[in-house]
Length: 82
Length: 350
Image (cartoon, rainbow over all chains, first blue to last red; front, side, top):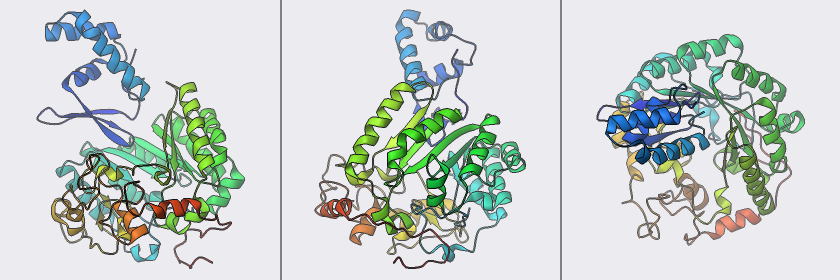
């Protein structure tokens, strides 16, 4: 179950701009990325996340599954998620 | 925090005139500066030097002030003064990340480069930090003298259980520029380095992040230095001077403003030094019409100044620079056997 790695923090500003604060930099996040990251609490599976977002956006899980998986894959390979 | 340091690494990017920075800001001023930084939207604070733990209370004060305002804090240290008590103070103050450097994967070479016996102490400090669970990056500055030991550096990182490894090919500012002929890696070393790191990244995927940037002397295009001058970063020097980058004091044609005299917002927005090369309007050709001008921003001002005497010139590391030849010459330069150790009292190199 993925969650933000130690030393990686989600930072949200007024007006909706959001970043991941990482050891030597800052990663700007899209609203979808923020939604996914917020749900990754170490207890939820990717399936849980997909289902929750599907309900929230009134979409089918199948539509979102690939995007969720892709983001998690990318963020895990960069060490933001563990 | 300070340019004082107990190590004498020849690749240090601090200015040569270390003694000119003895009038260090006090803790109260640092707190004010951090709060001003938070006010203008700064997100991250790197506490460094010299050796920041030589000013332990002030360094902790900076972390505390930053953390209180929600800023991410990173302590960049050689670690030998980071005992349990001080580490506890930093963690209680909200420190989120520590970076400790090693000079080589084994004590004999490491201590020779550092100019003092610290390697074993660093390993103890690293263990101490990792035991606390705080996010940690191991750094090793890479150059000709330790390049061939890249595999052992990676191996050591693995043995220590490190999750982030920064293999920083040395850049040539300050003391590193002085010692360039001793530090410059060979082309063969750089090629080998690429292969070694690529293999390690694949093998350690998901286990360790490895940062490795090729030295720009061996690249076709310059590095996007600081993501642009006065764009995303600023450095507050130990004496309060505000610089667009850690090496900028080397540009003698610039005048820097001090936090002792002006608010940080004002300095960021309208200090001569920041305005001088911000954006693209200052760019000469070939940068001005180049499609990469907002990719690498014309490269590094400090490097243009160091190599060409003109901070407003295209970084000669760019193959499009009419002066690119100085880079080729530097790479071909005969290596020296000795280096000038970084010391407070400067002596001219032999």
